[in-house]
Length: 613
Image 1: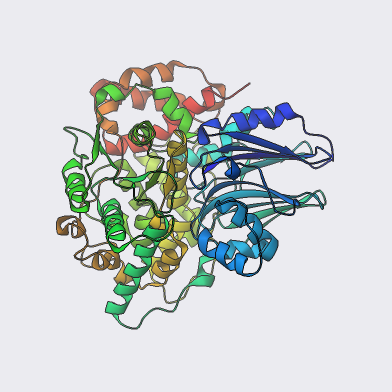
Image 2: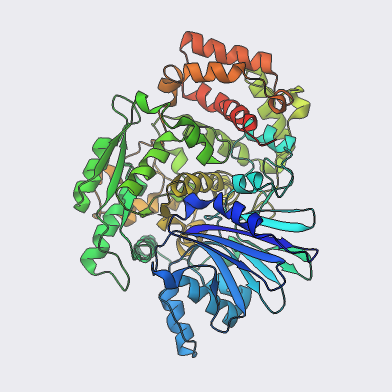
């Protein structure tokens, strides 16, 4: 797990060392264990790397790494969990290896299979491979966009990096705001991450399941992964289906326990994270395979004393079942403003919530030298977690609303109009220009997929949440907040075998009788605390925003409103916006709904106020 950056001059001019060193230095937090650079002989290609050493952590695993014959060079961010199996296959074909790293396996796979290697990988990645002979450069992102890759083509060069802020601050590309993207983010924070567009007009996102070629000075982007093309044949009986789900899930967890450094988990007390830690315990009892790390008994729990979204009792119950003594991190009002600007800075994007709690928990992992966390992201979008009853948090409310809208995505223009009308009628619409300024929905991954005719609205909605809207946004958030502290997050529920299996399942296997993730719950019977396995309660991993906005953050919001930010004024009806915020502050009437609705505007103004130039 690392940070990568690169500059390719499409005119054939030399890239200066200072340029690649600067953009790579801007992602130093992603790789605190070392830096490396490479230039092509003609200096028109430069690659930069910041290393977080997880597999083969010695110097021989450093990047940029060269292939055995010296022709190819790679910078890579992520993990290919099945690298041992691929290595054995390549060795059987006569390929020698010098290291124990998965990076070298990728290089050998590239020479053996070319872009088709991506279909053989089980993992998460963003990578760039340069061919020293042809001068071609190949960029690729994993199936579901777990690891980030952003790029810009302007002024005759391509610039890429793991984070948008690195490109923005590099001084290498224009940083003009995409006004339509900004408006969309403030109204629908989940509506852009699955697209290629970003807040900046000249910066694009390489979407999940896509790769980019630079050949002969020209660039082309191709979608290499389409989940619908890989759906498996399902077992015939329900019992067999449950058993198969359990087999895949357990193997997904075991593969993600391969590490040469200590591993752990962020434990919320909900079904997803509890299932993971209990399965980690089971994996050790059954005997982990090669490179499985036995230093895994590290569970980190964020506790919010006195808050309704505190799940400490449930987390402690799951930890006890797994035989783990958890680390409890209590988060209170004193944490609201501490490191506040850095938290928002590390977020790198505008969102509907304040990510302080997540940022703090990953910081605690780094402090205790636990560099890898197996977390439960993806289960909700695979199997309908947002439909569970109970729970608090604007995050979950917004997802349910978004999901209802997505059922009718073929009427996207009407949906946008109806959503805007609803917001305005309630006094929630703050965009300058009113309804006419609301941009249409952006094209996201999966929009053009022809879904099976037998699918109902539930499976159709999950498919779009998984590929285009909610999950891409969640993955972005957790990547930035974990990598801000140099922590690698692995996600067993996003093993591609489990994803394709779950997508193929009928709706009743995922949601029935008020239970979401039904097949996963059945597969975990007897393998985790029954009170958690059968609980319908759903709590989001959120900072206690209403309490903080009504308390320690009220002065911050007031001071932000007082700032004059021209780019924000051009987008937002500030008098109406300020009136609404000041009333909430005065009445101390912030709740989860108002926080989720208004925070994106506050966050956007903060971001725009800090842009260079």
